[in-house]
Length: 201
Length: 198
Image: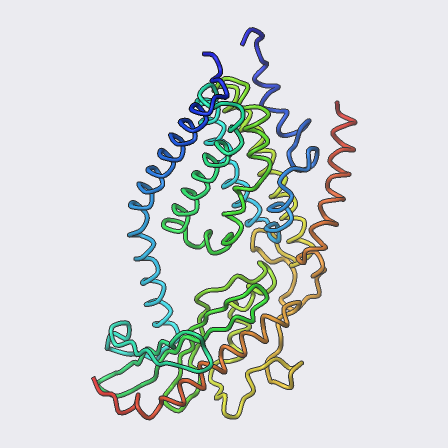
């Protein structure tokens, strides 16, 4: 790499300019599926961030050894291995989180955010840049999922991180916990996010 | 380093190498985690038994009875509990495939006369935040101390006595079915269980 990449810029782009959820709209399946509470969103975000980091590191290391015609299957094998490792480790050592996320963990494999970063970034850049890219993108994903989960939890169950602030029998907008609420909340958050980020840049 | 050419041999070799490495590392992690996963499953079962049964002094896990059933596809597990060689109740695994996202597996603890002592959810895939509320104490408390012979375990929508979970009627219905199934199995085998002595 001849030109020097501004690593701060590289890190921040994942959070603001190219936020995977609000700007690039990648990885919509787990975004909409698991964010019924802030904690679920956070757990899914962290698991995805870990897989993204590991796959970016490995892809960046082996990029010269993979013929370009078979790069996609090779990337998928790498990603799927890490997802399976995450799943086994979660089940063995953090069973309660595993129970919560359950079926959505295997779905990290098909999260296009991870394959997207492997293809678009890690396979073209050195290992340090790839790590920083993964951290930035991963953090952007974590923030987005936690924010979406928090908003849906506040409106839908009247609580935040399982802490209830309305009476037990209060009527809440159950719609926001149901799948349609995920789309509605995501749409409004995306509008808000883009409005703010366009103004500031 | 230069990028590898797209020759047939190169493609086969690189994919082969990646799958081999992936396979071995997965096997290695599996070795590490298979123990804790098994242990956790047994621990959860023992904890669930302690939750749903009256006080007991035998080891129900070892004395599990497998009863073939027409309702469930699998045989039904019944865990008898004894205290001072007296039958004090049994935990029955009730299951249904009719949950909102498939399988729901619960453990129902019965007193000898069929009264429900307590219920624990073992496995479920319901919608987080909606169907998963069936694990909440508030919901399960509706079943405690009730005898399904006089108490309808289905939600009020189906002329039952249970207040359905908001937004999760299907889950509630499936839960009721699983309880009913556990009760039926328990009553069918009640006589043979009571004579069973430690």
